[in-house]
Image (cartoon, rainbow, N blue to C red; front, side):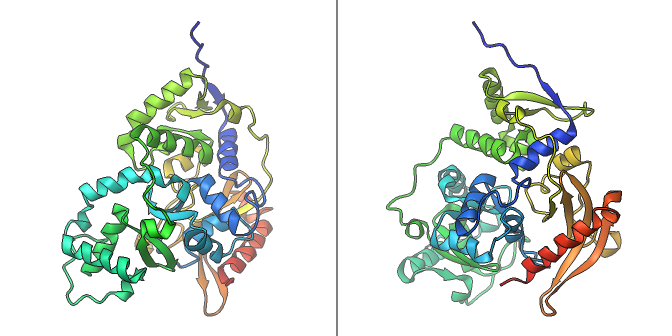
Length: 386
């Protein structure tokens, strides 16, 4: 007898938020434990942690991890990348730290980069590529500072380097020939991939179907409640195939359609039955000062749907047109975003500067204000540690 399909479950936006926050592990104190291993566990659970160059405060990869690991130290991520080798850098929706256990799911992308390099890598000659790879093979890991190019080339893309050897390093990285074995700020050290990981040969690549299952499972683990947009963030071409897998899992009873109350125009959502059976009734009033690149913030439409909050990233917006400030940080209390704070770390004076405070709810100027100020003191300590 055919399995009867489960009817969509209607939940409130508050319930949707609590599902997402629990999946993001922002509902508990130290959910990944302490010490260096907590970093590995956090990256494995989240699936990726975005990297960005802006450092008016601590860079976003450290910030994201600190929000989930109160005792986090920068050297913990360095240990995971360079010593334990449990995380590596690669492109997800952006350059990110990714669990090494997931390496095989990125081998297809690496092969595609070999066959069709990104626009700003097309000018790399085979001779330049061979030169940098052979130098690393012979002399060991190196950074771009270890290479002196006699000539510069014209930039043909905003993200491109003018140094031929740097372009070759970038191409070898995207090809999977090289891996970033260490990072000091934004200075990257490159090493042969197999040698870095101690592999005799590369892992077996995941099939296209396995990659799609991986994307869906990663989203379910880190988001709890998913849509095609949230699963395929900046990968729209994969939506038809992911949708087919979702429909198959719904028929098997492994996923259930979900409707969000009072949001008739919201895209279809799905969740696992066990997630829907254990929606938290409330969340503790924990305060998190979030990076604009945090997984909770980076998908703007989803954020607006669940929280009713429209975040603006204004680092590249002219000053006179900014609403929240250059590098605005949303403040989460429990399951509500109550304020947005534009902060800057004055490292010489060893203090955190509040450039602008924008209240999103009355709480931010009332009962919640002392909680936010206390969180800012902790945040300042994190900025100035080490």
